[in-house]
Image: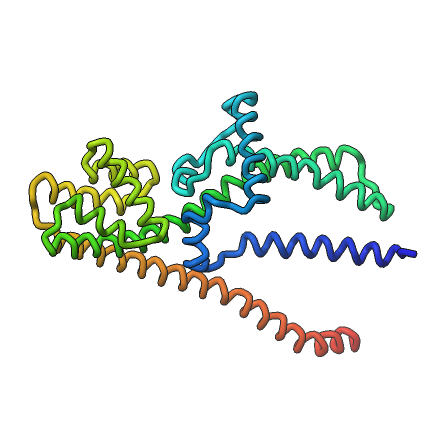
Length: 300
């Protein structure tokens, strides 16, 4: 027969597992480049059948919510981040409703579980907890989209610096502006090169200059580096200016800026790591001093 101690141990294990999963999700981690490119590339658009069913279910839920619920409910929608990640708005809203529903269900389930242990709560406690947790979890997809888009922008900047170098080499070999941009985009298979190739192909079909298409993409996704590159290529295409040195200098400046950001991030992580070390030292000193203090207090 299950004893009260076993139930309490099980409850403590579940709570500890939940806290560990939450810390694992919120802790900063260095994403694997290959995995990030695979998730943001073509593999992301072709999920497994089970994952595809879940995605379609969320999109149907989001489509229904967009049609029925008031527009003011969807506050602070990260449109640029969703466009960068290529997440449909309906799927994003479906995620928000799914997380909110989980927030509504978790407190009543916990209250029922603690009721089995004889630790009953008034009805008002899980009711208010459900509303509060649902409101918090309603914005979890916003955090996920902003965090994933931040990482995607970093990857985009790294790939863009290589792309600019390739364009400079193509221009130095005598290729025209559009030809150099299209050839450089076709030389890579990452999601960044694929996105650039798609925009350049779309501009060719529509008769739009390629630099205008890239400028529009930069404004849509919030990518200032791509906007600067489009301005350089506009000077090359419209005024016939030599841009080889400008492109090489721009790529070098981008790499230097990324290196500076990585060094600053590494220093910030190092500073955060000093706090646990200092705390451990304080605890060690307290353990050494505690017996002497106890003896002194006992003698008095």
